[in-house]
Length: 518
Image (cartoon, rainbow, N blue to C red; front, side):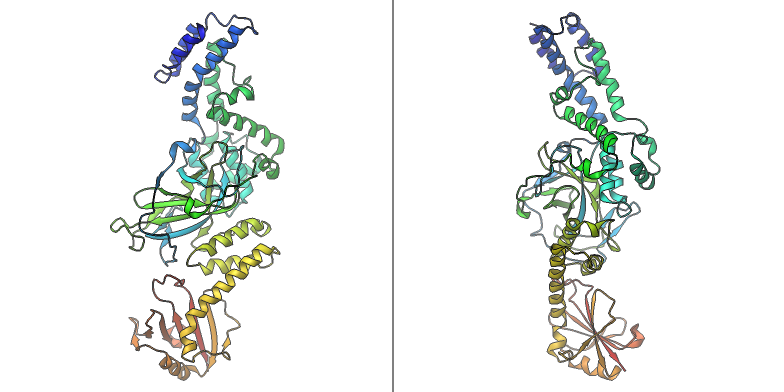
């Protein structure tokens, strides 16, 4: 009778406040608290008390949780990407950053390499999982978002991960280990008051009020066993994870390898681009996250920005749309598998060379792969990373560098083909030994301005003048031949070949230059 009566009462708890819950529990359990500890009736009463209290406590927890379950904020998945197939193409001046460091993108398709962070200090993080995107929410979501925006490249990803775990676990500033406090002081210097009090201490007070009002039929927070927490569903698992992490951080400190060992990274699920749906972030932005790794590996976020006037990725305007990757989180769709948050690895200056990347071949290889995956490769970023990793003796990295070099040479060969066809460049033409421009392949010829004029005349196309008066020719495929004199900013007279504007295959920054020494 007691159990059936309590089950009926449970139906009303979604409609009443937790203060009213205390009164109801007192009424129900007044005659049960004095039952013998080992009696069957008492175990029934304890079970009923847990079932009655769980939905109320869960509601209280969700209002205070450092990070909300990602399943509550998943973006809409669209059956088909609007505007045709995904074709990332480099476009000069197509992106910038606002005053808060938020990426601003013009209409078009983009591949953005990201470092990934685990958003739960327990569970599994298998390789090659298919994820969907959600928004990062919770009482500490803004702190973690800002951490992900600003911590790299000042601090290593592993140290950033430890601080992220600590914030997720509800630790106060004083409870952070020294290395985490240092990162917090640099990245979030004006936000210490936000973690002055433990979130879980506040929640514990609410929990213990229920325990007191039921005379212990519902256990206190401190005496709740791991097994009991697991019976409370998803929020009970979150509390258990936070409790265990607090013990681990006290035991292992800044030993990332010991803390990371708590995450099972075994197993994998084959993932392909076609199997990953596109998330509709808003009417202008569609995105998806792809990775062959797990947390603390590099993945890629693919983004399509659509012009609001013309629903096509090729409809370019000067309008830049804010893209806040740090406010997104990858949802695996399973509570046993880690969600992942992101730090962007590209900036206006190119690759953000994070600390320890040269000692982390997997990270470096993944970043190289992400750059080379674009239909039009950002060769400046490739060369920057290649130079940084030049001495890294890892076969996979070196193979990727060789693959990139081969691809880059093919691009240059195609760009300089008109000059070879016209006889301006042949097998005896010397390459410049001091070329420091990663976007340019340079050659040296003698003859000065006179030879430049002869070679310019050899090139096909009708000579015309650009707006600044410089002589140019435009070939049938859109490539431009530019005749530059020393007064045009060049040290020597120069014949320059530029790719076609808006080319689907060539980075628009690439150049072939033939410099004519006297």
